Length: 556
Image 1 (tube, one colour):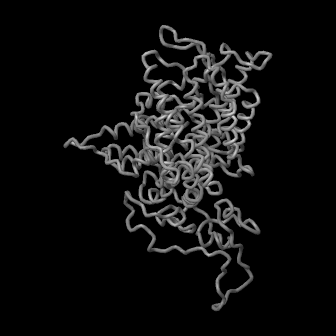
Image 2 (cartoon, one colour; image 1 turned 60 degrees about the vertical axis):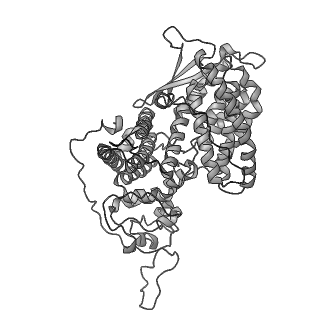
Image 3 (cartoon, helix red, strand yellow; image 1 turned 90 degrees about the vertical axis):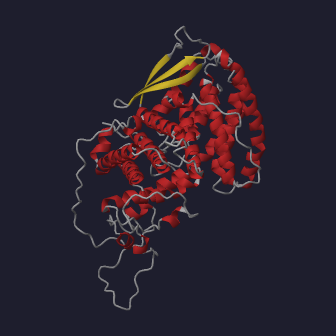
């Protein structure tokens, strides 16, 4: 049974608290030097242990059991690992929220060999997996310094800590399944890591409810938005997309309530400092991009009521810092995303909204013309740096926005056929994210924008070769990437291509009568099935407002 959080986690109830049992096992003294100093169990694989390799450490090898170390013999120095220091341990076990963080990198926040002293021994590998991979993967694309310093929250906020440990445990449980890309619910709950993950997941939800019962504040918003993000990833690992949708809707409603919340004196309850603004921007980006995909419905209902305010953010100078440019782009991207949601992703624009839609379209295209030279200049300057890849996605998004804004008012969808070179440019940019070697572990490093870009190309570009290239790119880019690793998504896109292919004439042209919108999907998590729903572009709403829909069953 999947864990399904309800409105503000209020639907979760437990009859009794989980019973904590200490693992009972014999102590092994023949492990490698690195595992001994980290105080974790070694698998004793020779010549280098698998635990160090899996956790990203350099194995220092094994001591000779027959050698006797004298008083003058120095200890092995193959790997310089800092020892535990009492001065680095928290003085209090009570949750404490840090509002501002020092300018430190992730590895400076938590030395590789140091696990918080108050963590149970069984939690050490989960913490290390979160520290060494998950938070770094997320920070590469999510933007904002908060995710680079998330370890501070994990150490001092019980709610965030349990959610992070649950995510790391569920990740390890999924990797132990015969098919990590499509793990079954029974396989996840049968292994030790899966049971721990669900226990910690429930604990984190309970703590979220207690926080919200005390009222909305900066600390509560920061903690709950972070855990909402982690909860969604836990459900994605299980393949439960319907629950992911509901979780993100809960988070969006929490943000809306936080904006409206007022103290008895009439002042806002939440002070939106730079950290919260950055977090909200990243959360908005995530939910809006998911809302633009045909696989998540709830975000559309929450965000469609909001429309851009006409400011559309500023276009920075090309010589500004990369972080500033990325922040400005996130604000602009969210404004465009809200507009796309308000016009129902181009499916149908009502007559009363047409004038407003045309006005927004003109202003957005003008802004994009200002953004293009800035993005080109920054890309050229950052070509050999890690920032090159997120900047590339920004450029691909700008190209996709330009195509959509130029064509969405064409009810026949034929206008998209004029933009084949731009579609090819999007796919070429996305191909940069195909790993040279297939990853050995599940990852979170793929930018959340990748899938909307590729799926937009597949659904709107009717050139047969470009479509097949986009499908191939989608499969290769998303391999072992948690966010978009669901086989049902790829099969549903293929179903759309096959549906339109039936109407392709001898010249290779697909007439408007044979073109379809991918409007949504219904997930049956337990049976691993999905119902993909398509609407012909030439159809018009009935008197009840419904659209004639073609439903295609998908098994994954």
